[in-house]
Length: 401
Image (cartoon, rainbow, N blue to C red):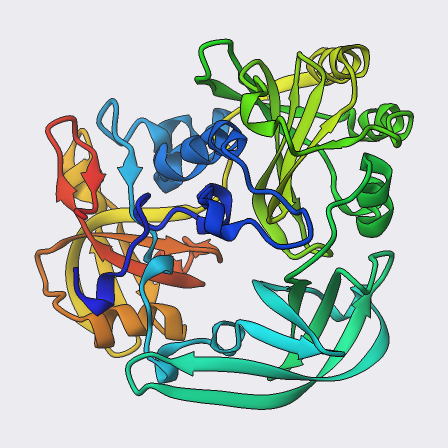
């Protein structure tokens, strides 16, 4: 494995969801126990379960014709380029400084930004630290640090880096005594909507279905009555979290995306929203109330849109764009669409120019977080990843390891 492809054991899946080794247990009682393997099963569904093609994202009446273009069973599985170690000059400003020292404490980046409107007061200045492993060079600079509205400044803060406000999490924290401490520190009822969930069955397999619920406020009301629920660590390994529901936990204010909050029928709540694996004994009565409330006030939703992607044949590498034809995935090749993917973002340029090796005729997968302008030559904005793929027997495009 060369330096350009330093992958973790799960081929680029968010390492903070799966890192369960004992060496990552922080001094002070914060525990990342083996129970996280069960909680992280949701993340396997999210990240390894496939990245859907544009026409299959939210198929409704107006999109039935679009989704029917593709051969039955077509899905896209792509290994994220997030685990590649990029040279300093090919990192975004958000990626360059993973560590911050503030008031003698070490903080780690969450690689997420927060809108300026969510900032509260300036906390002072801090030193941010980055490192280029290829040049073996350390980079340091001073940044202004702000507290985030409603959030404990001793846990989370935002540093201003090149006009972006990057969220940092304090590295060493005492394990919370109870659920109320975490709810207060993170203002969870206000900062963390519990809107999407999937069902966990007794055999520890996630349901293929996603549900959307409007019961978030009611769920937090139930949890307000569980504020004294103790944080369990000593017996976390032996706890059965296999049956219940798992909410997707994403919050701009907390600097998180695609974390997990699981409510198990046996009365435990588990979450990795602060990176460490915290487990709280909320009791079976409260757990059953939450599960029932969520399920009774939910509707099945189509595949949750976490990462948008395009797959097809690379037909042209131009100045500031690439062209990708998805005809290879269609029932009728005449129904193929040629997408004009802009390459103005450094994250996709580094795939083309630093990783390199792309040529016309390659099967590729592009991930993007912007939009497709079908009125302007199907122009794709916000592309951040370009990877090679191979056409599998079932018609899926898979990026080789």
